[in-house]
Image (cartoon, rainbow, N blue to C red; front, side):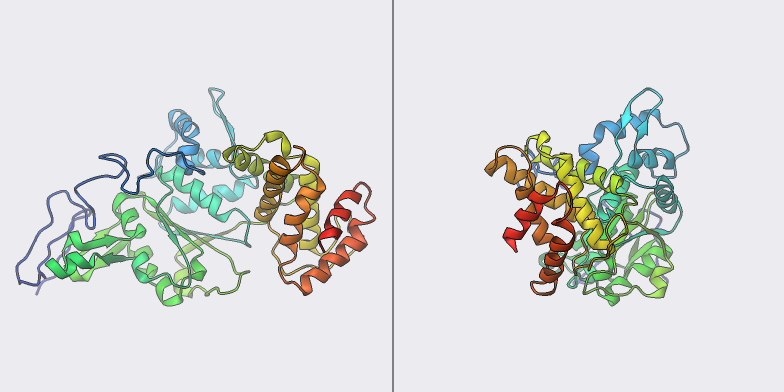
Length: 409
C-alpha cells in the first residue's frame, strides 16, 4: 500500500468509512472546519454574546487603531504570514512615536532588547517559551505578540493537570463519528490545528502544568510543522505564519519539567521582575488605570502615593531586605508579584469608590495587602506582623498604613 502525502493545505481522502466506501471532503473545506457558517461573520454568535459589551476586549480589538497605524507606516520586510514587520511588532509592545506623529502606547515596560529577542525567535522556525515567576507579564506579552503578528490572540490552550492530548492535536465529534465513521467533518480541531491551518500564532498557557506525556505531543508538531491524522490517512501541514508561544514558571506547585527534546524546540526568553521601584510603580499605575476604566471607576482614585507604598512593601518582602539595604526582613511564602500589586490597588480603588469618601486611603488597600502577603495563616502571619512592627511602624508618613494593617492582624 502506498502512503498518501497531500499538498500543503489539502485534506486528503478518507478511505476508512465504516461502510467501506471512501468519502472526500468538499472542495475548499479545511479539515475539522464547519463549512456552514462563521460565527460573528455569517450570523450571530451561537453563544448569544456577539453584540454585548465585553469586560476585557482582546488585544487586537482594544488596540486596533494602533495596529492599523503601524501597518500603514510599516515599510520594512515582513516574515511570511505576518501582519507587521518585526520592528513594528516590537514598537507595538514597547511603545513609541510613528513618523506621522501617531503615539503607540507601551504594552510592556521593560527592556526593548528582550522584546526584540522574543520577536526574532518567532520569525525563525523555533517556538517561543516565555519563562518567569508568576506575575511577570508572560501571558500579557504572549497575547500582544499574537495580536501583532497574526491579528488574532484567541487561539489559546490553557494548561492544567487535566489537559488532554486532544487540546494539542484534535478530537472527535462522537455523534458524527458513530453515525458516519471517521470523516473530516467529524474532526474537532484543537487551537494548535487551527493555527497550523490558518498560519497563525497559538498560545499555550502554563505549559509546565500539562502532564509530560501530553506535552510531548508538541515535539513532532514543532519539528516537522505537520500534524498527522492517521485515522484519515492525511495530515495538516502548517502554513506560513504558524508558531507557538508558550508560558511557564517553576515557582508554583504542580509543575512538570519539560523534556530535553521539547526544550530544544523552544527559544526561551526569561521575563524578569521590574528592575526598579519607579518602573514597577509605573506598571501598576498603568494597569490599574486600564482596569479602572473597564470597571468605570473614577481615574483619580488611583493615588500614586498608595501605589508606591504597596509596591515598596512587595519589593522589600520579596527581596528580604528594605530598599535602603539597611534592614533584612523575612520573606513570606507568597510570590508578591507585580500582578498581585495591581490587584491590591484595584481592589482598594473599588473600596474607595463604593464604600469610602472617593479618595484612596491606607484602610482601602490594607485588607487586600494583608491578604496578598498572608497566604499561610501561621507562618506568613508571623512574617507580616514582624514586618509591620520593625519596618512599617517607624517609617515616616506610614502611620495610617500601620494602624490599618494592625487592626486586621
